[in-house]
Image 1 (tube, rainbow, N blue to C red):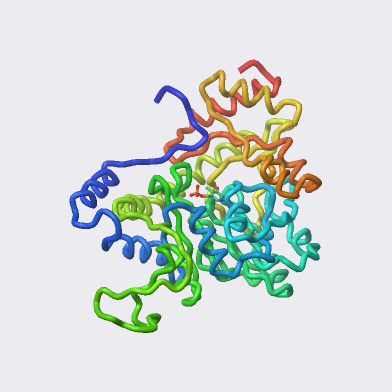
Image 2: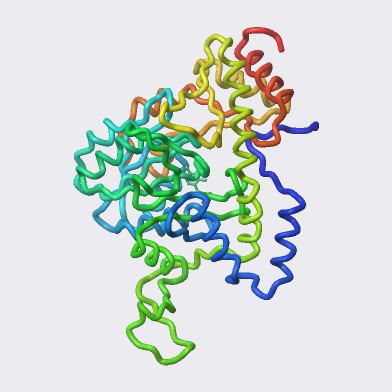
Length: 387
Ligand SMILES: *Cc1c(COP(=O)(O)O)cnc(C)c1O
């Protein structure tokens, strides 16, 4: 395989193409039987009672925050080391955002930093399972319970991840054993893709129903929710919602992808193990620490490199046809957030992490030879040896 090596790449097989072609030829392009089948597949995969699919992960977060009661006068507490969507979705609802610091060596929300928040407007705690590793959800759940916060997990990176609690029990991300709602993204760089797409899982029937209405203009056709019934054509709009629906064609792709995901997850773990083995002997380079309770989904492989060498390593990789990236610029650095009243926000852990972070390629089809090429590029860029 030659050509550019991106930091992430989707896997599209003949089976995916066949599934999409079949959906295109079926009677429903938009809301047909595959939507509920994909939802059932997802709910079974993560072990939750309910799943609702959306046309993006951002839409799933928007619906989840709405269902959890975010609106004017309330805030979502998340971390600065996330994609802007985690914060933006609260603003869509007229809510605000607060940022709890991360641990710089893992980029996961620090439960003590969450516990230090005295802001009374916080209503939702939104930890991000960064890179596919699981945040300290057990400790965060204890903080949230004491504060009466609702937990909405941003698991956009973490489909298939599991974690062990202090009682020795293994939990699946998405089962919502320590949260009200868990959100996923199926954007093309994520672990499975529907092009654009996302989902929210929950065990709470009321939240499930609210998110389903939110997805389609606040409209319900469910007899148990209707206040009248003029006939079989009848529906009611109960609140203001959106058109956030995922299509049957996309659900066909999602089902096909999910069926093959366990194999890809194993391949991701192998690539991560190769990297960790090789970087163990490279001075000044540390792979991101993986929390001991987490058996992650290996969405991203992030290195912590000397801040003064990061640009040189990035450029050297690019020169060799290898795409690196940085996840993420602290959200409060964004000009929009600076203007929105966050100019003095500084979270030292997030700053320290951001200065040193570099994401290198990780995708299921990656070979051991490609891993060696990336490692050689990193070492050369570091200035250790000519590669
Ligand atoms: C991808 C992503 C999102 C948004 O998902 P989209 O499907 O792109 O809307 C939200 N949060 C995190 C952490 C993400 O990586």
